[in-house]
Length: 264
Image (spheres, rainbow, N blue to C red):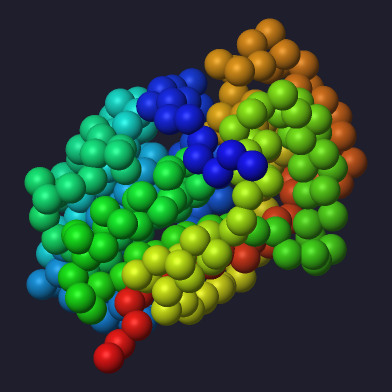
């Protein structure tokens, strides 16, 4: 079974514009717990690897002395830089990928990734990060999920539609068929694992799910082409019965898997 997805630096080109609004936001409470658990302060540097529109980089910036945000997609970096400027955060943005990691980036107390590690050669990325992360440092993998609660009754329908339209996406099949991140981490230098999770409820308009579709590379316009509008209409029709006054209730379980080296 293939484990490494072939690298495509422009995979998210057409998805970039919808990513910031379409994807669930990691809550501030999660970052406070990450900072506490990793012992971050203003003397430390942090990296947001595969930064996308910069949500993690911007959230970490108040807690550390310097944040470096890395992504191969120039459209993502353009959006991220604009968001950082609006937030008043000074962040260094670098167009690069995990395949470019090396000494030129310097050392870090924390390297964080959100929804990006599964696109990488995971074992090779961890090998490179081992040379870049301080002895007491860590890697944090942020993730969001939909717990099985009544608020999320619509989610299975949404997933089914996405899966059907993305059935021919080779990268999605590779991701679904390989071992979880924990398996790779347990065979790496960062084998001391701890997970933290926070739950938040919000209301979102049905059309927010259309933007979420467009932020997913497996069903982005660059892949589905003329089917994009039909897909959006199908989602609206299928999900609207779950809404009240055009709004859906959504409960997100936002988590961070913290991976560090074992102590002496």
